[in-house]
Length: 292
Image (cartoon, rainbow, N blue to C red; front, side, top):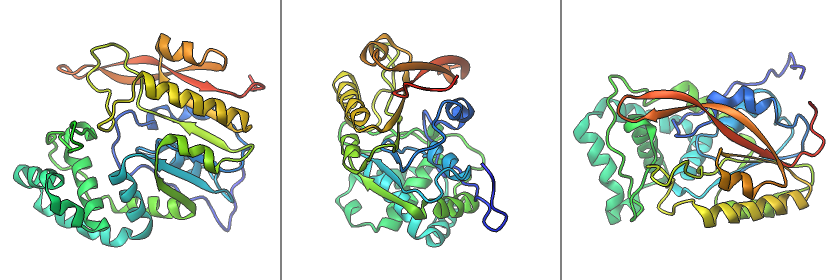
């Protein structure tokens, strides 16, 4: 795609760390993504790596991007980054100055209090990014009551106030519609030839997999089947749909009527030793005339 000399594309990247984020898979994914489509939809937004890459490559110019997630604190944070980045950066710099173990746990405990509901959108977004940058592995995890419960990470100098990333992300988000909603609402705003990328919480590789809950509601068999129904409806609307998930028989059987490709991802395989290994993930699509 040619670049305009008068209006070169801006480069944006995720301003959050996110478990299962797609930055390490970008080239593999984009080799299979459509190059032409109308509007873009990403209902499991998370860190937004795919959206920011599409924007940075100029592939969203003149298009609308519909970004959504069921995580209300995450969506609030995106809206603050979009609409009030300067004050957010100022707040984060203050949090950076105050950062220590005691301050982390005081900040984490805020959602246990009724007063949490009275915090401003800016204060909640500041807390969200601060915890994301300082908690263990950037892992967003809540307990059965919906309280954030990830312990503090061991970082010498966490990048809490990433001014460049936030300002660039804010520019990228200006032509987006950001919503706090369930994935099934994606169908409402789609039209033929739109591109929908689905990156849900992955189906566990084993019955004892430790991280299966992105929010307090685990995304297991029932939710995966609901998402499959959404995939089919989007296909019937003549949208281009692509979905990432774990390489499991459950997922491959569910989507057997569609095209299943494989990508290789680096994933932790030993929580104690921190070992990494390349494992297969599936990329499912409904493009019936894909070019080799």
